[in-house]
Image 1: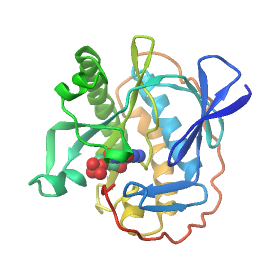
Image 2: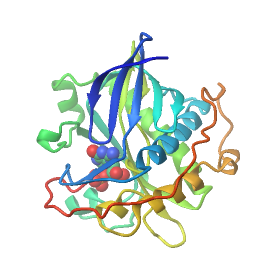
Image 3: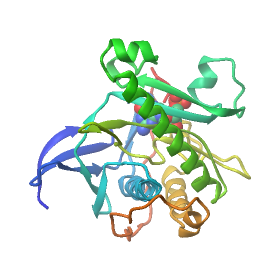
Length: 275
Ligand code: 5GP
């Protein structure tokens, strides 16, 4: 498998073409950003922590019948994926009120949301990812109603599986953001699921175990990411969730070394979108 030219570079990941048709390489970089890029840093090992968490979660979801773009890990920060035609939607599933839903609506932080609340934003940094509804999504031709139904169904299934995975390790899955793409006519989970895109709270201490540690200067971000990866990738967690609907994990287990962390002090800047 040969890595070819850069296809796309985002805030924390770069996507490369390969010499194989229909397969791309996602490189998880050490960049970390928040507040629409208003705060940014490079934190050593961040890319490999997020790659490891993401790879583990994709394999877990696949085993439980969720279609994802994951193929295998090439090294601790490079993931081989199936090429998707990405749909520019940020699908956010919320189990507990926190973050923007508390800032924008009269929810008290920590309120349980049962059934979970799905919010879909338009992925467009220049517009600060405005919230959409079904009519807007169809009018903008971003997805059909049938695709939207498939996306919401998949999002709720992913949520149920992740809630169980996290709960087995004493972690509350507060909310998370996912992105989908098309593989032919099939809707497939793409992008990543990592500490950058989930909001996680320790069940006992209520301590943040995700990018909020960086956003709000709550402590040593990389030490937190390292601890979370160790917690969520414990195989014991997998035994406690429902049996898979088939399919072996497509990748070898990750054996990436986790070297010591040297986090640069983050620079504070004013914010637009509070993420
Ligand atoms: P909020 O709307 O409260 O800012 O975010 C809700 C959840 O979605 C959080 O877990 C947050 O990390 C995730 N999220 C929202 N927008 C983005 C984004 O642009 N990138 C990433 N990686 N995660 C996001």
